[in-house]
Image (cartoon, rainbow, N blue to C red; front, side, top):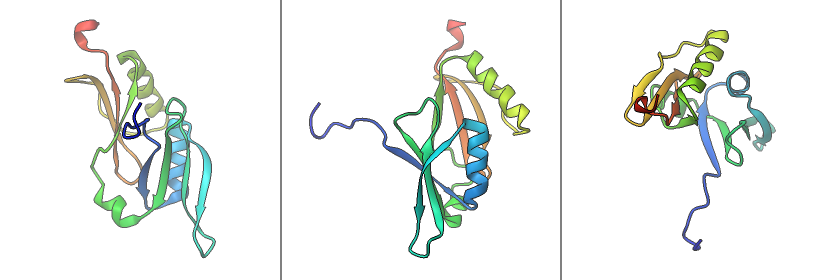
Length: 135
């Protein structure tokens, strides 16, 4: 490895309008375990980061920024990977149990996708690399 070679992704930061609501949602959906809080000079916590099972060592961070959250509504900046189409079906059932609207399992050019939105309308993808020709 050279000094200019990357070693992975340190964290992904998601803008939110309501930190508590987003943390609750990401806990229920992904099993988020908050590990860091970011209080500002006034003592108010407006940011948080944590671990999501399966993404370690990459952290997912949240920052209160209503303008950025609104600007990203409907945008899909990240696709989290799962191993198989069957795993996506399990995720669809989990989302159903939480009453979270989602797409049907959709065949894409590189596998399968399940698409849904977080509380601020950020579009999230779960993608499986298994192609239909392998099923």
